[in-house]
Structures are given as C-alpha cells and as structure tokens.
Length: 121
Image (cartoon, rainbow, N blue to C red; front, side, top):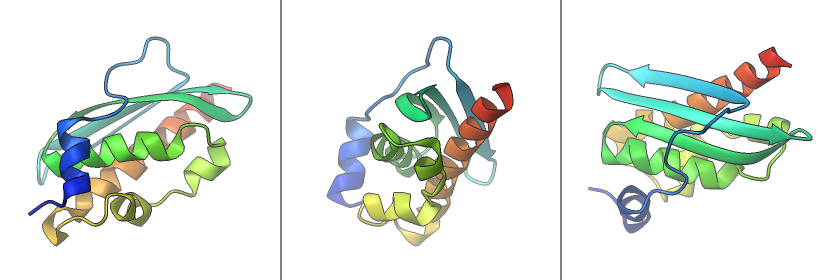
C-alpha cells in the first residue's frame, strides 16, 4: 500500500519529539481517521532553524510529518508557507488516495505554527 519512501519516513521518522520553548506551535486533527499532529518551530531572522513534530496516527500521517520537517528546515517563513499539501505528498513519492488527507494535516499544522509564531511577535 505504501511506497518505500513513505515506509522509510514511517519507520525512521526525522525530527520527532516535543520542543522546549518553541517560537510557534500548530496543532491539527482529523477525527475521520484519528490523526492528530502538532508541529513546533524555532525561528531566527525569519528562518526556521529547528522543527519538531508529535503525531498520533497512521503511517502516512507520521511519514508526512517527518517529510515536512525535512522540507522546511532552513527555509524562510514565507517560503515555508508556500508548501502545500500536494508538495508533501509529492515529496513522499505519492500516497494512496485514502491517505492523501494525511499530507493535508502536515502542511496545515505547519501553517498554524507559523501563524502562532507571527501572532507572538
């Protein structure tokens, strides 16, 4: 059902864990499949210096969170905001149609974390 890249991110997720004193936090959930994602970011000079995630959910949700963190680390906030749900799915080499909503959660959580960071400034 999942391709090799999705399985790699699921079995060896990158940047997983809670962040102490994050600059911004974004949390989203999808009760339809039970996935909940929380993204933490640290920002310096408008650049995402560090990003972590906690995800409760299916393999696609965990893989999407992991891939997203690799995609945005080192990007400016504006560059990170341009990342779409489709970009996350493409980074993973595609997701099965019933699991595409998982990539939506990752991008949405990131966007909420950036909004939270900006609201605090």
